[in-house]
Image (cartoon, rainbow, N blue to C red):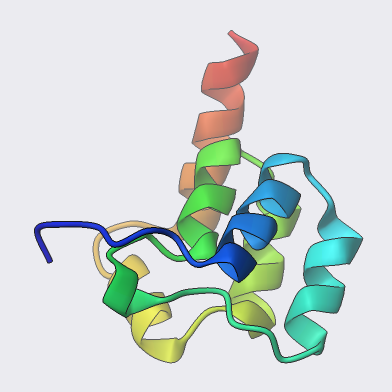
Amino acid sequence: MNRRQPMPADLKELRQLVRDGKLFAVQKWIAGGKRTEAPESGWPPGIELAMDTGFHSMVAVFLQDGADQAVKNDLTGDFQPLGISLRNRKLRAE
């Protein structure tokens, strides 16, 4: 998809929880069955934002229960999400 649509309001809320490091709130979000991605919108799934933050526990939550299997398959092809998260955390610390 070449163009992004406006981000759905529920995903804005989820992305803010991820950015703020609200691990338990994200776990509750996922346990409540709320969506973590909207492929039709062109925005990356929540797990990618979690990887960017370097918060490996957040990435693990998405890997365990919060990411669509197709997204997990795409993400684990040439790289490992937890490894990327840890590398991003290290880069932020330097």
